[in-house]
Image (cartoon, rainbow, N blue to C red):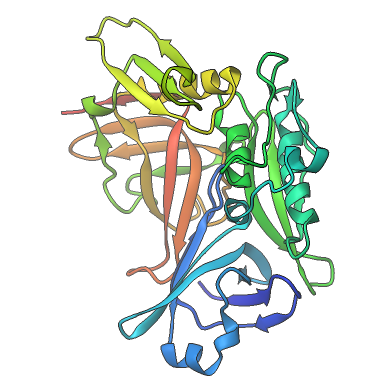
Length: 365
């Protein structure tokens, strides 16, 4: 992909470290309700001669395409692998997995009763960035929702003695059924002197039903996707296990009858300290387990049918898959993607998918 460069920056001082890092074997992309990732390789000689270019845990890294920042995150791992130097990075929300509530109740922002989940997410970021040397400069959308957490009987607390990262608290707010979505984004500021690091919040969801792009076999899908029919993954009964030990462990059961042999699944949600949160997580797990056979991933090339970066996480895209084993026609929701600019035969993108509003399978054998 022409016009692409990799930049690095010191997270604490804002100093630009490299305007064009020669990163090869690049793979990067976004994730729905997660940080997304970037990986690549450098020359060991370059790293040895410029040790300040990459300082895991403190270095920010960006992808710029045609003058626009399209991905940003923190370098978390850098290590030699044979004759190359491999790096791995993740976007802004990964930082919260390395931060904890040392004051309790997010220093007075909690506890929460019937609280908007979007507000809880903003409070977590506000607390994390209020601590000395903890300001990543992330801006969280002002989006509001009607999805709430905490009840008078099950107040949501953030206790300073909990061994849970702040990232787990954010994950709780987007894991339940009918909860908000988030994604990590980046863009240049007006004069292109610094990056705007942003958490996009979506309610009732991120993304849109796209009628202007599509994924199709023989057009832009370059491999035959697999659709697994795995009985091991199916269940009509989900037992959700929450916080606590022994007889004090919270438990919720979601179940239906559908004319099939009863299959049960136990899901562990140790972070769920409230019954309302645990019920939402258990219901969502049941909805996932009731789907036997799913188109979860495709690999596409860059074509006018769906040009790279014409989609975003959360979008529903009409998908047609035809191969000797399966036919699929229907809407799929994008939950993540990874672009490989240096793939053999030209740039490719691997798209992670989940069921959208309606879909159907046929021809499975």
